[in-house]
Image (cartoon, rainbow, N blue to C red; front, side, top):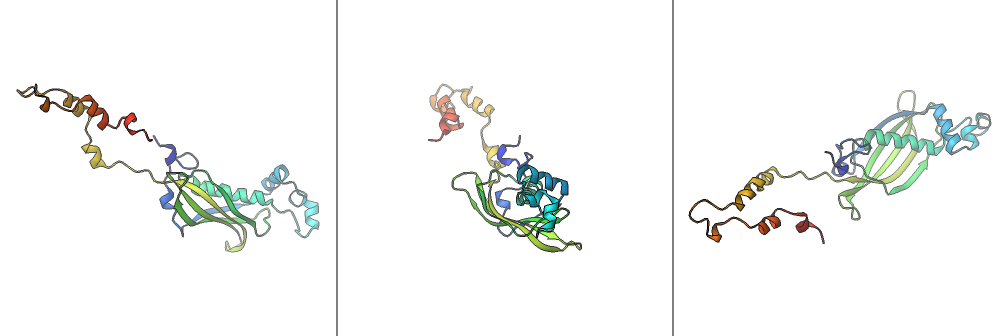
Length: 220
């Protein structure tokens, strides 16, 4: 069974771990198209400022029409981040954002190219088994020829990712005594030296200590 530390952000088995997210790595998160109805519905629910929800007032303003709530735009980024990276990576929680900038208005019908760049990575000192990854996310508006025209969003944040699980060494597994071996060690030999205590196998106490019982391995 896949352990929690080896699951992706969406619960599937992870294929990317902390060690794979090296500084300099760029991950393409695809292209999203801004849906007009969704954009306005989000604003009415969470950010009902007039330039997000009132087309007449917005048309008369310097905006020239409705513009998306910045929080809608960053939500589009988050969905792309989950779909194209966290769904594959052994992601834990995030300690938060360090920067969030809306660099240009976003409008219905815009096509936004999304990417994330790994800026730094180090093992977590507060959370053993996790690494802290510093990331920069960007969204760029594409023109009719699919070439980037303008950066509309930039964010810097950190994420925790599980380190790759250590697999057991097959040689060590073969060398480890089996239950049958241990039971055999408790049985006296049938030969003439069986009554001699020096020829009898390990005692039960010795076996308990060497078999890695929970009592023997419980941390201080």
